[in-house]
Amino acid sequence: MPHTAKTGQRAKQRTPLSRERVLQAAVALADERGFGELTMRKLAKELGVEAMSLYNHVAGNDALLEGMIDIVFGEIAVPAVGGDWKAELRSRAVSTRAALLRHPWAVGEMEGRADHGASNLRVHDAVLGCLRAAGFSLELTVSAMSMQDAYIYGFALQQTDMTPETPEDFAAVAQQQMVDYASRLSDYPHLVEVVGGHVAKAGYDYEKEFRFGFDVILDGLERLLHDG
Image 1 (cartoon, rainbow, N blue to C red):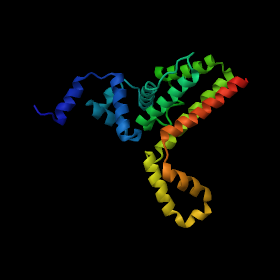
Image 2 (cartoon, helix red, strand yellow):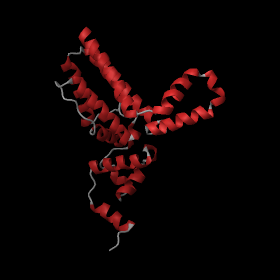
Image 3 (cartoon, rainbow, N blue to C red):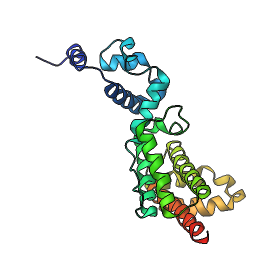
Image 4 (cartoon, helix red, strand yellow):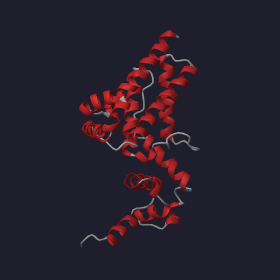
């Protein structure tokens, strides 16, 4: 029998609802349409159920978002306490950025939750443990954690706000800017030097620049650790 929207809905209805299924569907919907388009009614329609049935698994919008955020945290590499702390923290940073690229709606939502899920707590505890095992004092551990998160989330936020995606895209945009602003470029010699002289030729690589910046942070933390 041909698959129709109605038969597809019946198939969804035959699959019992669970908290995990509701949250996974919510994440998929937010990935596709953005978190602003996610409502209980739309989520229920996607699952082939009535909206009220969702409240048996999530208490409301806040609980839904908290569960979704914990799924994103579950995709982040958990650093091994006692290992090579720089390599472990680098891996966590890279995987956090990758998770935020897969789920751009989560940028700006990862911290400050009222209720922390198990994956959220696991990642945070491991990062703190990694720093403590490396020899950082309690005070420096707090500063190091804050610095890393500010950089990771800030970079992800900036990237989601940018239109170009590849180095070639950036080069093309920079070249066009040099044409569009030609009559004013004499007032901005440093933009001409950097954007016109470098970015217009080499472009800008998100991955390369992210790793460069994070390694600068790790190297600075290592110096503080040795100086202390």
